[in-house]
Amino acid sequence: MILAEGMLKPGALKGKNIIVTGGGTGLGRSMGEYFLELGANLVITSRKLDVLQETAKEMMVVKGGKVIPLACDVREIDQVEAMWKDATDHLGQIHVVLNNAAGNFISPTERLSTNAFNTVLDIVLKGTSQVTLTAGKDWIAKKQTGIFLNIVTTYAWTGSGYVVPSAAAKAGVLALTRSLAVEWAKYGIRSNAIAPGPFPTEGAWSRLLPGDLLKKFDPAKKVPVGRVGEHQELANLAAYLVSDYSSYVNGEVMTIDGGEWLKGAGEFNNLDQIPEEMWDMMDASRGKKA
Ligand code: COA
Image 1 (tube, protein in one colour):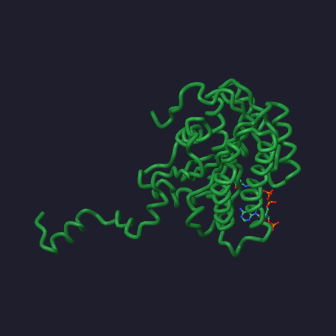
Image 2 (cartoon, protein in one colour; image 1 turned 90 degrees about the vertical axis):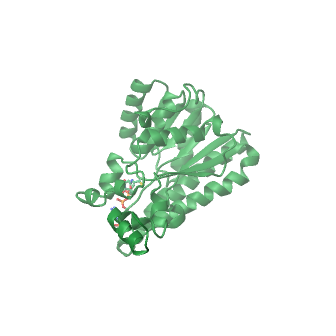
């Protein structure tokens, strides 16, 4: 099926060294695998070195190339700086940073402890800022160009109940992306973001919506195109945005959600629940012939 097919030319990312935070599992892993297939070398990071090592091994068997697993909690600046140093020691110049690491709790906000709220802010906003600042300062000092791709969410601009720390933090990441896209363009550093809608991942989905909740709140039902996303669809977009084909794209946030967030936004969109017969009756009542 075309949805599961890679879109870019073979070798489109040849020679690019790419860091993927949160790259051991889920969407980070899927995007990383496609970058590797297109010829990139990868550094994948998360807190769990054992998971990263296993993923790196599996990726290299299937896709070839070089994948370096580095433990890094993005909340800790010492770990971020050490990871950056290790990454450059292993690969030399880093060309792309994919800020993908995230955390989220679905909960009424008043039930969250201060520590829970701060945990999400710290991973998403502070973590992304720390990786961005570390990479950006080094690129600027060495007169190297670079590309940031940040994963946000469609509720970064609308906000959303029940995921408030995530919404606040992702809004911050979006502002960071757009601000630096302008400020650092003079150094040859581009910044873009992707706002994904529902893309199933084993970990996050079962943690965020445990048990029957996933069935009850089936995310596919909220998507106008009637389905959730395929990982390769997201990987295709990410690969384009970190490739030189998108050199003129800067400060953009690209939504990939099958129209989900707009469906929630349009005042009359839920009229799709009105059956045809009722539209017929309404037409008839204003004298329209069938
Ligand atoms: N709902 C509400 N609060 C929660 C929670 C949940 N599901 N899980 C943890 N917390 C609270 C904890 O009680 C703690 O607060 P407290 O000290 O006041 O009790 C605080 O959040 C930090 O929890 P802790 O487990 O110590 O955090 P951590 O730093 O070890 O890990 C995460 C935080 C987010 C990395 C971890 O929970 C995780 O891996 N989550 C799943 C990853 C994820 O969210 N992926 C989705 C990406 S969008």
